Length: 288
Image 1: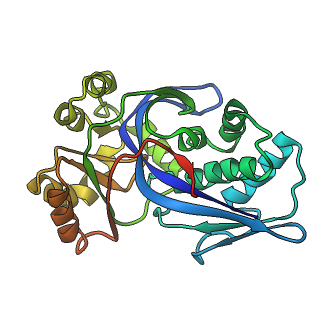
Image 2 (image 1 turned 60 degrees about the horizontal axis):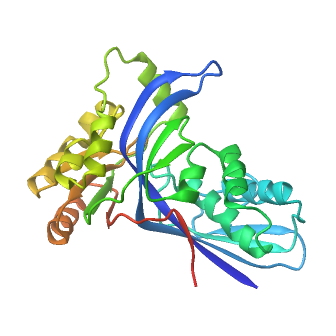
């Protein structure tokens, strides 16, 4: 038996911190968007036990991997044996980039194993399992264009973006997400996104207005590192730019593919990893 699932990367068109829970988790308001930059999860038969392999040496290939943790949680939730399958992760989404690559893999494992075992869990039950793994995992399972609240797991679908193109540029490495939020807590007056206006623009299908409203409270922290990348994007006609997640990936929104491709070509000499993507309406999808 073989099951293959495509796992889409995530962009934050908007990310705002609006409060903090008593347990220390930050309360967020975000507009999240799936893009067609995919990792692939493939499940195959194994005579005994569970194993995991990855096409990158710097990714854990044991129980420390988020995909392995997702598999164990699924089997516990569905009351099926944690036995008899191998998980193969083919990674393309950059790591520690603000693009939810690990969360996407976990969501794909959940969806794939649900198919593997004959769909013992409903979609709601899968989402309930997903939030136990990480705040971005329910979105990665759902995908599309979504307004996220709370710690990021309260999701409301939004109208799909008009056709457009994203140029993603990752330069350098970031501290942990926890360290980035600790730095945010020290900021006095961070520049806040106008998330509700962005949602209004999306609901009325105004790409220009939506792109101009793309903003992230972490933008300022990456301002110096991303200044040249941002300028190149703007010179090539980006309608808007912002950091995704807690960084460091900067993205630009483009109306036409030619401009996006030319921008990406120039950025390849300036950034570690560069991609041209389009919005997609799913987070995880079974691959025929």
